[in-house]
Length: 265
Image 1 (tube, rainbow, N blue to C red):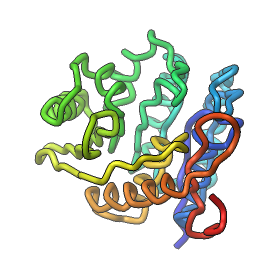
Image 2: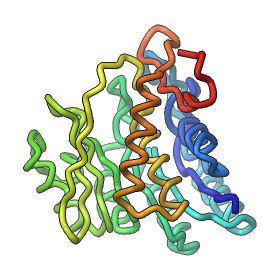
Image 3: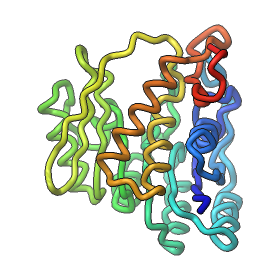
Image 4: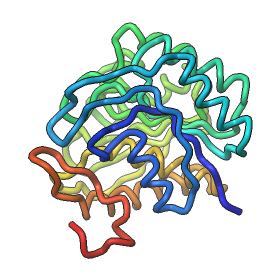
């Protein structure tokens, strides 16, 4: 059976992150991709030049159009930009009640540009996090969500438990910002699981967070147990990073189709 996933996120005109990364990841992993675009960014490998937020009624209509006609096996949420968009998405998902929601709490682009207004953080915490089957913050995002300083493995575990207290069913805190071996933490009410991986020295890493969360979404839609879904997503993302594409003058994208386009680097 062909599985269907819906990405609710922003568009990256450079094609490396956001909606585009989700569509490419799901296509590579054999999941049919659907989209509800929340914002259009003028973005390339160097940075974000402009952001245009989609009107709320159009965001709501996109979500309703998909759910009213097509089975949605899983939802992934990325860039939401502001509190009003968060509230609109929460209202729609509360009505449609998808079984799987993976939340990538996008706050800052790879180049440092802010993609979530500071005033929206509280709405993210109180409205959206409680809907999440899994939330996938990096360390700076975990610090914003919890108010904790996250600079060690022990602090990552503390932050993951704090995020579960906000209502998420599971949390994957990505440890790539720490020095040494890259260790992610998967936290559930049953406890914390360390997921170590070799640190990759790579330049072209634009969209890695989007890619990982999209891969987790696809794997959960396929029925994988959570820990297996996260491990498989980490492997897919690591391979995409290792085959990153040299594109533009800045940080290029990961190679989502590395298994299909083996000659392209």
